[in-house]
Length: 187
Image 1: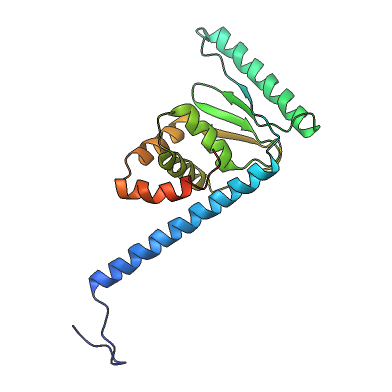
Image 2: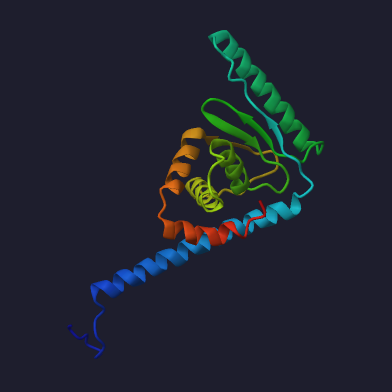
């Protein structure tokens, strides 16, 4: 092993890789802790909120029905937004289409909470570790945005499915690491 000019041995490739992996693991853990913190803060301020879910009709079979449905969904969304902004509702509003989930954030809601809802609708068979991993993946890919009350958030079903697939493909060791954070969530 070659010595450096200050009489200390130069790090070998194995120690550099090990150090790098440790830094990546710590960084990932910090990001998850921050996401869990945002979630915990939002659930404390929104414990009295109830979720209002407005499912889309998958019965639209003709173009006219689809256009009519889209107009109806837009009206419903506008009405829910007005109720949230006027303080008549503090709940999250959700609307589902074939391609995405559209949410209006209620008081105290975070992107992570909305991602959690989308993941729960996509795959109810996930373990809690997989759910936390998938919601964190979705939130990070969206840039972890802070939300305003009644802000419209659209989460593509394809993005949700990709995050779910990624979480399911994690190694047993990775899932065990995520389980620590899942244990911190008040499901």
